[in-house]
Picture 1 (cartoon, rainbow, N blue to C red):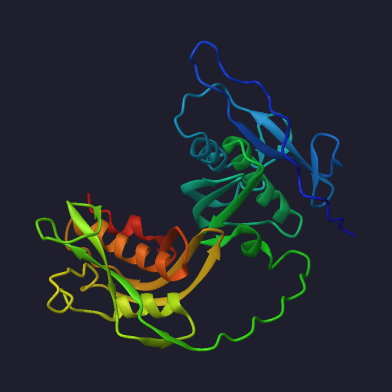
Picture 2 (cartoon, one colour):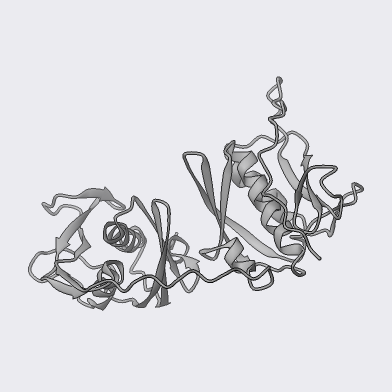
Length: 306
């Protein structure tokens, strides 16, 4: 019968900084299978989570470099150490990371594979502890294609009681805040983006809804006109065909899932599309940051036409 161990705690800080400017080693985590916590923090099926150190490396982004180094290791065993690499069959790519207080959130994309219920916590904790140690924080959240890694793996893990369904929200009727673009040279007030443009908030007529984020994004996507009425504000999404699929909120960040196709009119349209979607979503959700995924791919990758 498998035992569920307590979550690993942050490892003691190790002084590994080079004094001659040659860089610092990365701390990467691997698994001592059925070690019972002898070599490191005990996880999952009586395994140990073990810190290993690379050669000194120069980098400006310790989190990205450490995670990319871990993901690049496609060997089942880590060198001659005998430590197991539960990520060896996965094909994942680092997208970005954000530190908020004592938590780092790491976004990955690609194909995540696990060998079974014992591999699930191995995969999760290799990534989480490597990220937390690189960021110098106590906690790490890993998102794969916008989904928390524990949810990705939960189909093979121990049964978790279902949370009660949230009570239905009563409909409300208020204007929606939707963002459009004041093109460079136009007299508009708004935050600057891209090619000297401005991002400008507009209010719709009062709309009745139960999901403000879904209503706001759906309203924006439904507008296929190049300009917003007589305002002169530009709609960079006018040629795209996108549908709202849902959203999740993680702290001060909302993750919006869309499907369909994005059409970019040129290099200047890329940041316009990204800004319209992200700011409309963040404002509707009442958070500081928004991540927009189209068919599971971050919007910034799809609109980059450089």
